[in-house]
Length: 114
Length: 114
Image (cartoon, rainbow over all chains, first blue to last red; front, side):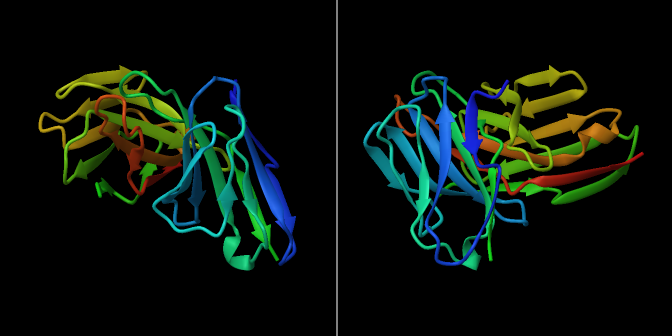
């Protein structure tokens, strides 16, 4: 059973449109992450959050922005979509305390900008 | 930053064959994790390793945490068609409750011919 949900699963949108990719988790995890995955498979961290009102940029520069107003919700927004934003976007979360906690991933959003 | 070298990048095998893949790092980790990503889905945790030298099995999967804490391998025995997917290793170095980010390998794409 998935405890982290991403919507939509697939999105085809025109250049210049504003879009928001939704990510919600029901596990009470403090830490949440956004990854961009290209056809080359590699996972690129673009944003992360360690709690409410905390957001940081990841290792790969991205024109997207994120917000964390509620623990369970970590949406990603593109103000003006471009074809270069076409990619698979994966959201993940992890527990705050304890050692060696892995990430739980959502099923992803496949974004195509035409 | 920390980097993981995962190999091989891809594998094409016959059903029934055993598979081996590994990750090496230039620095140590406290935790090694192995994930599998099915086509069109997010990665799912297969095995977590928490101690140097630890050998852990999950069905036909076996993984080991290297003694030097800089490497890990994953073996799949008697492969079946549903083993197809991308396998990711991930390392985590945590200290006193800070920095829970995972470092991911670039993935191994496994194809199993029936």
